[in-house]
Amino acid sequence: MQRRTFGLLAGSSSLALAAGVKTAEAQTAAPLGPGLTPFGSEAAGNKEGTIPPWTGGLTSVPEGMSWDPTKTLPPDFFASDKMLYKVDQSNLSQYAHLVPDSVREMITKDGFSLQVYPTHRTAAYPDHVLKSIALNVNRSKLDPAGGRLGFTGGLGGIPFPILDTTDPYKAGAQLIWNHSTRWTGVYLNNDLAAFVVQGRGAPILAALGPNHFYYSYYDPNMTPEKFDGILYKLLNTSSAPPTVVGNEICYWDTTNPSQDPIKVWQVLAGQGRVRRAPEVEYDAPSSFVNGVANYDEYYGFSGAPNQYDWKLVGKQEILIPYNNNKIYSVMAEDFLLPKFPNPEHLRWELHRCWILEATLHPGNRNVMAKRRMYVDEDTWQIGVTDTWDAKGNLYHANLNPKANFPNMPGTVYQDTYIINLQTGSYCAMQGNYANPGYNKPWTYEPHPASTWEPQAMAASAAY
Image (tube, rainbow, N blue to C red):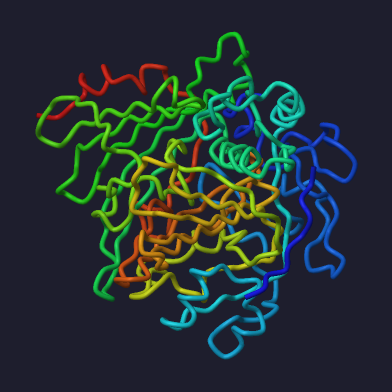
């Protein structure tokens, strides 16, 4: 099958929340070069007009709408849009060049469909992030032993906004690090729910509880001299279902895992002791979704990229799930259908994406022998991942819808949906829905540094 391809292109968060969505930082940083946005994507739209130019992103609530971010999750800012067309079994051949391989498989075998809406380039970043992106052009360096091993020098923004397309493997490594360092705020606190759907049945709650993130890489008070290579720290505590109440995981991700490996600590309910948990990495089945998906599948790809060689294949207009605030107003039972997420509530848009392929580096093992990722040019986030097993069979479809938070400002992940194309089971890794308990507003207040220390986990562990 032929695809349409394109030539390669050479304040404090708590204050932002208090200021409200009308006063998010302006997009004032200078462009990186002719025709580029301040974060490295093509500023112009496409010639057909189906992808508009970037004009600053979504940094305030659209006129005629209101939202109090301290009380609710953000509404669907594009609820008045009319669907352009639907892609299903009847017309897949007409749109196949715009649909990732795994999604075509879902349409062909299980009757999935795509509801396609007008494209909105909502990506936005605070001014301090844009300024850091401009600085990173000349200071971010891949590990000289191989880009898959890590990078140094970059801080506070996308490390490689202008990919070195003279070397597809170097550019591929730059691209996966751009995804890994995507903008998600400085501090982030949210309650997220994970579900599994097995045997074509109803969704089952697998995990529920608060997450506390600290993205030290994005802290505006951080300097290159003080930065210790820790990209972010996460503390997750399980509050439901009863079998996992009290479980905790503390996770430290790094920008150079070859020199400073990812660190994970775990407390299991009833044991009252903190353990190192090196198994919470790579293709280990995720306990948060009963093993239906693996830890390194979060957000399209998660964790250390050192098992793979990364190759930039090109750039392509592709349909990916985008601007999906609507999901926040849907009950989990109505959205998580027996075979796949409800197409009636999942919005797809046409965006330019970098096509990134990962193949196992010699000597490494992973059940995902090959991955192809469609990386949105504006957010540097993976929209869809296709995966293949060691026999060359399509294995998982990994869908990653995005949601809009103009108070950050940012367009960030809404959830990750991983569908096993061979068994029919799937999971929602960690999202918000309309159900009470799953729909708490995100907050951005700082927490004490001890929040992410294993010693603090030990002090609060339940016996």
